[in-house]
Length: 206
Image (spheres, rainbow, N blue to C red):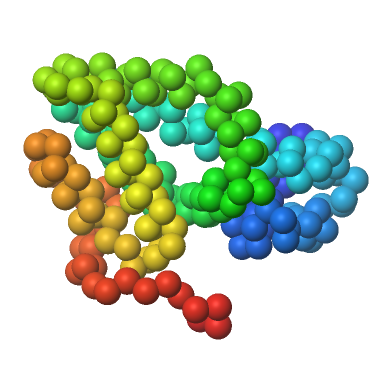
């Protein structure tokens, strides 16, 4: 019951944070969304920051585990790309919340603190990617690691902004081509992805 209550609260907090942002969200909003008493929320999470800390820790842990697979360097790289894109497709509110925290100067520190708490995992991801690119013959594995993460973070940003308009499956296949990986045999996200169109952000009344 304790675990179920915590998960219910965290799910509600994630929805509220992704919709309203950290500063505009209130404990009352989360209480209403979760359908629990304020006392229960504050018992597990004394304040908004505690909720954000837990959500960010989970997010960073999920990202740093994308290399926990076996196989050839190409297979591991493909799995890393697919792991990120699958996470984007399945948990867009997490990406929206994280992006809003990172780019807002008043909340950037919350993300920086979470990254510091997950330092061991972040380093393991960085080192794993660098070793992977070294095994693929890259002249500068560290730069390739930075470039891959930059590209993937750009994909996350665009997907969070444009949502269903963003052609994730087509982007996935283009990434495979960029890194000279064998073409995927099956769709990861959409069997019949929409054509690439002119993406526009949704207006508030839509």
